[in-house]
Image (spheres, rainbow, N blue to C red):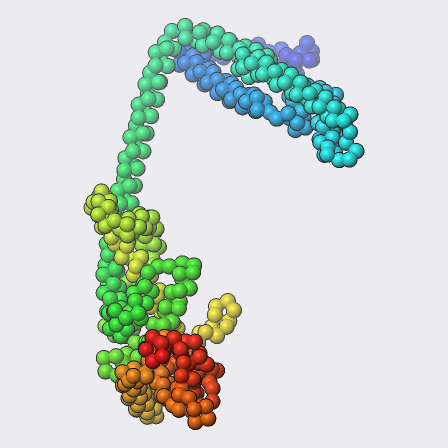
Length: 547
């Protein structure tokens, strides 16, 4: 036989399996006896007994008891949740409306069957149909009686349904809103858990371990609570220190930028005159506005801008703005960079967060100050010193940011630029172009000519004012609605042989000249009683006592 044909040995005989009765390939051999096998057997028996004792040790029983308690609590929470949901549903049933939607819900809840729901829906539809036809020519007394009968049936069914729903709710409340199967399930689970807990607690040492673990858990809970309190206190302290650092930087920025803005607005008041209407516009343009008031601020800024342009191009002496630095804080040679840094600091994320935090309080105090300064001071005194300091700094910061925006809108762009989205060209502001215009006028001699022209215009205005005073002082001169003066001259009409009046001099607005032109007669002459003159002229003459 070849090597490949040799059958494999059946090793199962060594294990006492199939073929174990057959002769062993090893031949007759005495069994192997391990040294210490008897001692090992006794030690294994001791280990098995120890394992059984460990399995029923107080620690293991306490762990089982703790797990049973957790299961009992979970069952309790689940039951409470289902009871709450059931009570919400029952409450909804009590307020159910009698109609198609209410009938469908009662059918889904099993209170009525589908045939009853369909009949009630048909009853509702028939009543609505009859009500829609009511008042028509074909709506007879029989239809009216039928409608009353159907309404009565609807009221009867609604009352019966409500009573049945009420009884159902009462019965459900008696079992806490749960079904019989749910109550039996929870009762069975609770009973089993109570039995297990009773057996476990009767084991020696279990209650002591549970109490010990409870005390450890309580100590750990209080330790965690104390750690959380300390962490919250530390975080609050860090936040307070960070806010104080931000407030300190904010104060510095307010002082630096506020001083520069003060010089700018003082110059604007000097140019416009603090008590003039233009000075009022300068003052009001510093107040924050929105909506329609924002549009009014644009018009006021346009008036201030025109005044600035005139001061740059035609100003003389103290009324001339020779440099942008006089009204533009960031153009000042020594302090311009400091102003820009201060504005950047005021617009930083931390500064804006601090401003937003106190913004509501600032607005409330501002409204209170406008109403009663005494109440404002009392409310301010109620705050802590740190809060008072923060409120006052935030007030100044809000005003400075608003004033900076007003100055930038007033001056416009310093250079031509393109819109970031549309690409539209945005030219330089009129304020900056005015300095180029002044330089060109100085070089070409236009400044001198404009100066002489203004002097001539001033001389003409003075002469005109003297003439107006002279006319008003004369017997036949008077003022017309504050728009000008007229001087009448008595004349004699040869043709009609009557006395009358002729307008000898008329000084005033274009409106007055236009009205005289429209109402003109031959030579601007009028009869003695001025009956053919404009009414406003006759009334002014009567007030003067001429007629």
